[in-house]
Image (cartoon, rainbow, N blue to C red):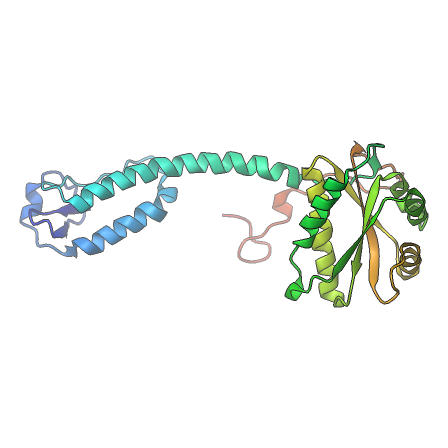
Amino acid sequence: MLALARRVDRFIRVLNETLCPADRARHVEALVEVAEVLRGLESFFECGLRETQGRSEPLELARIDIPHPRIIALRRTAAAQHHAHRGIARTVSSFSLDALRSIRRVSQIRQFTDEPVPDTVIDTLLELARWTGSAKNSQPWHFVVVRDRETLRRIATLRPSINWAAAAPVAIAIVLDRAEPMFGAYDEGRVTERLLTGATMLGYGGGVAWFGGPEHDSEAKRILGIPGSLTARQVVTIGRPKSRNDPRPTGPSRGRKPLGDLVSYDRFGNTKR
């Protein structure tokens, strides 16, 4: 425990004792400089309150006989920061749940209503996609917005498992230009997830329709007028969700694995202490 002696420029340290009367501090040699302790207290109140919130015992400071302006200010700041930290913790917890809920439950939508998707919504999603990060900031993508019903129907007939795409109000084909194989796939995944997440947050939904392989990719590029030298593997369909169910008879099951089956700590296989 630390206490301030009669000389206000130094603190003293009393080991293994409860410091009650201020008189006890008068005859103990000063060991710690005030400036050093104040820096430590400032660091504690800035960073340490989070660690003490879960503790049940109160934090007790020794009584100071002669008020020091610096210490009075520190006391007031500490009290304000204590209440602020508690308020911020509650606010962050509530805000985080609300902000992440729509992101956490981004579903693959394969059934849409007939409601048209306004150009303003598509433009907003394209702007969101444009700002997606990419390896070396290469920004290798080009986007083809497809509203033509016949074009969507032809894309949907490339293989049976994407025939649901024919009913989508609009689709966005992602085209990659001179993307490295590994980085290109990574960047394509990032921008795809952005489109799906953005559509969900705007009250719509998105679904990914993969063309199916090199031959299907070539046919899709021919349908969309995409040069053969570029890469195109999918369209992201956008619309108002009619249902979140998978219309395909052989679609995958929903749900997620428990977090405990997916996470290790410090080393693979270690559980949380």
